[in-house]
Length: 317
Image 1 (cartoon, rainbow, N blue to C red):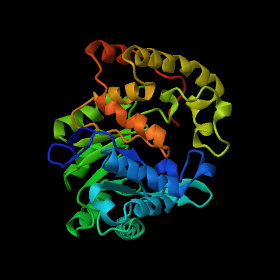
Image 2: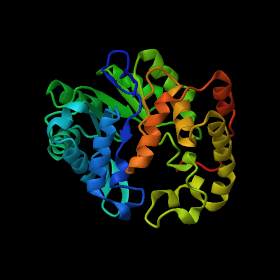
Image 3: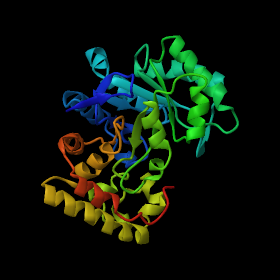
Image 4: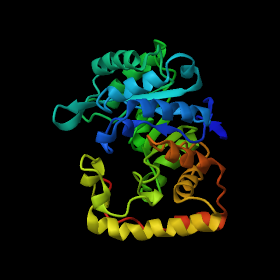
């Protein structure tokens, strides 16, 4: 798979990354299979995927343990390992944000222990805590860089003003946020700013939580323990309306002799020099499909047609 730079001053990584959340968290949790997940991560590395993304809250905590098991030994040197801090399990209720410096300092050590490594390549603030000035939280992440526990630090789901405030304390290596054919809000301000600043942009859910692959046609197909059952776009009426959007993507894919997933990911890749999508999967077949997007070339006409797709029915959350 071809590679790209992780921002203007970063190392080269595979242009398609791997989001590991679904291996232990949120999507069809009952089908969890840690051995299969380890095999998928190894397969990803063999296919040229280097950016492996996890977070302490996924599981919670178990996702980092699975990733750590997969990257044990010589595999660690093949990966650009990213994790996150700042969301704390709610103990049966909603998760909460915690951006206190003492929480960051404690959490990086806990993450490194679970991951079985002495450093991560990217440590990200999962969400800004409104109760803590971002400068304080970001300063604690910067301490991890100075201590050699993180090579670089990034932000997630932030606006331009928050990026600027963080930059005043320590360089921002990356911004992670949702971007796909049915979630485009970052195209207005955030993505242009990251491009201008040479900051890597990591789109999560670039396949619309699996919907843009064309593999979901009914609410009833979603497993009982699946997060998507609670999301507006997957409710039955909205889902039926959104199938028309997927139908358009499928038509383009058939014309190009490829798959809807590859078309959707190729569109995301075309949004900027430093855009590195991290589609999640725990299935070898879907991993191969995702990686194949790196070889899909969309013409200007293809991109214009995809740009013109209607907005989806229903909000993100």
